[in-house]
Length: 232
Image 1 (cartoon, rainbow, N blue to C red):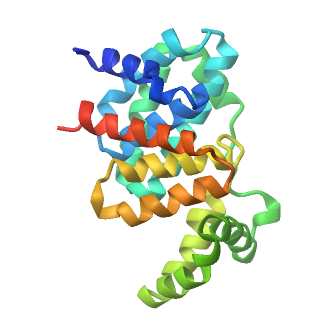
Image 2: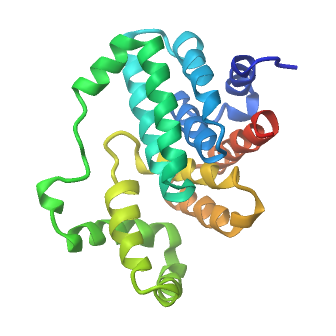
Image 3: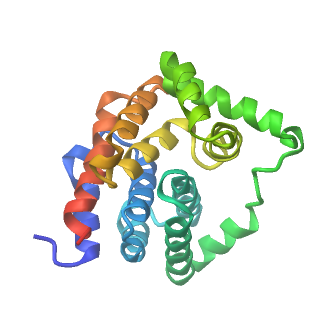
């Protein structure tokens, strides 16, 4: 059995159940799920494995993985909460600065805030973009769910559509919408049965985004293994 976090992460990446996923997808899912499961201390080991074993060690490829992993952790805050996301991003940044400083500097030098483009400067535009993704994910249940959310608190649905979906989840600059839904599935799955309905919704949403059933199952496998291997 693996005896260190690095060994456990390495064996997880090598598991046949993960094979349906692209490497960047499994990496993004891992980063988000570790954050949501509140085990950010494993992230430095994950960065080590990514740099040494998962990539070809070319700086440009490492930058790509860093961008995707950071975005996955950021997007996970929509279901895991801001404190966990801050902790995950802190561990991620510290590990990247120590283990692949050139790639991290390149990422920081070429990345600007991407949630405030001029064409989305008003709430209505953000809401429209978010509602488009929301409707795709929830499909025929979208209207009913909007009614339910509106009844829970008058500000809940507008904020979910404009902020969570409009500004964060629907942004595909660093993580496309397919990988975003896989990240959501895993980030929810590690939280256990209390959010099983949300897991099922995003599982179906991933399929509607064009993700294969095998990829969804691989994302859930990563989530389940994180709970088994790292959550005390």
